[in-house]
Image (cartoon, rainbow, N blue to C red; front, side, top):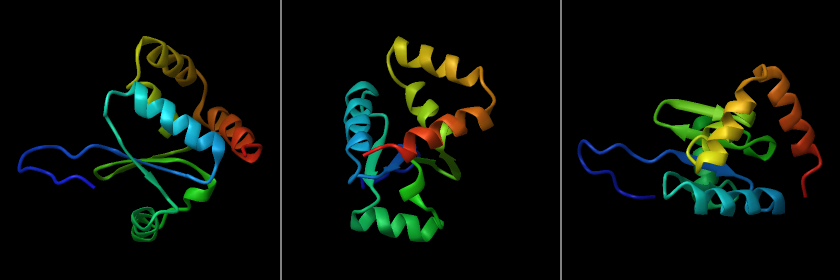
Length: 116
């Protein structure tokens, strides 16, 4: 984890499943296209397990974006990462936000159930 200088905001953390091929490919893609906006942490790592335990998260079921006191999960986390990508990512995020969160999470759950 990177040190925080006084008065400097810490980067949001994306907690993801590093054993999932789809999740890792998505993480690598996001990492390249968000211009170093996030810190990516595999929940299987020591740091990830410690973070999950401390915050009482179940990352094997979803992705989390942890930004200070805010914790986003499922489609909300995915859309927040898309919002920090190039124009096409922001465009997809705007499209995704047109749907109710319950619908977006339903779609997220279907994809998550069939990931490998």
